[in-house]
Image (cartoon, rainbow, N blue to C red; front, side):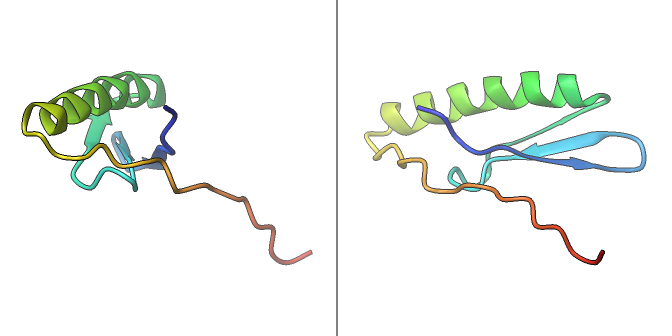
Length: 70
């Protein structure tokens, strides 16, 4: 499965979250670190859901870049 990950650049770090997995987040000093950590977070999140007998959410989110202005 592939989940959409949103990366946000902060003043001193990068944050990553997964819209289809509420609460699944990671923060890193670099974008690469945030992506590595969010991959791990997704794995742990899905394992925890499975261990609790909860359904695994299907990926539904997608992204589109929208240009504005000239």
